[in-house]
Image (tube, rainbow, N blue to C red; front, side, top):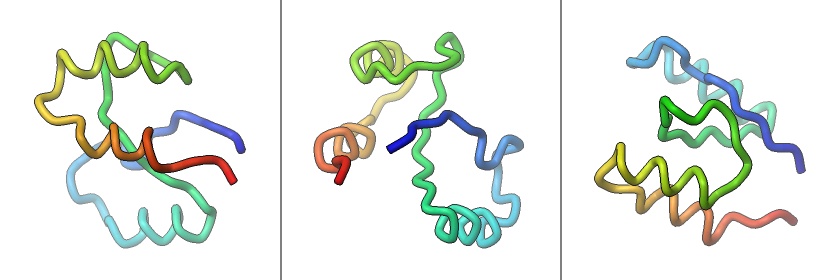
Amino acid sequence: MALYRIHIRPKGGIKNIKTTFDYCYNNNILGVGWRVKDLDNTTDWNLYYEKAKSHYKNLSRCKYIKRYIKKK
């Protein structure tokens, strides 16, 4: 499994969500994001979570993914 950080919708908003979804679905990409400005790139969950919790009130979905999405 490879892990990459990409901006699926770099302009944010609702810019053609169907096109974005179709692209991700067809290319087996899971897009999950709660951007943390002072963290450019990491695969370290604990580092990310410590920084993210000071920016966001609710990271329950993010924690769910960490807990239940596993490499096959």
